Length: 96
Image (cartoon, rainbow, N blue to C red; front, side):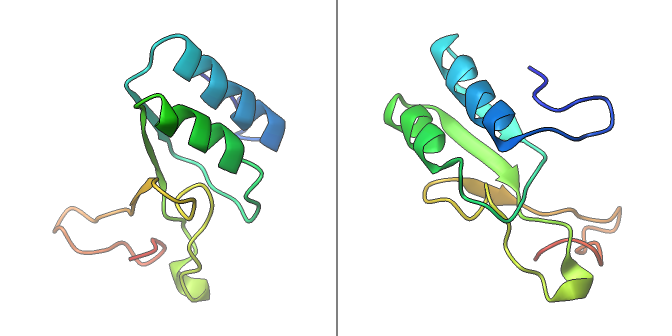
């Protein structure tokens, strides 16, 4: 389900509501290729995880700025993933 607009923008509340709605609709896995600096998502992630949903999120695309780990990947129990290049090495912009 889409939680951001066509430009990839939205509000943290949109993401939170999307996590809850996907969980309530029976999702087994929630995969989010998005991230930010706020952990407003923690209660929604905990809700999903407590109902057996696996939550996957982008580690972040700030490799050139010291690779800070972004939320949602920084939330407890979330599986964080980075971006590989075609030769299976880490993309320069991706968090390792």
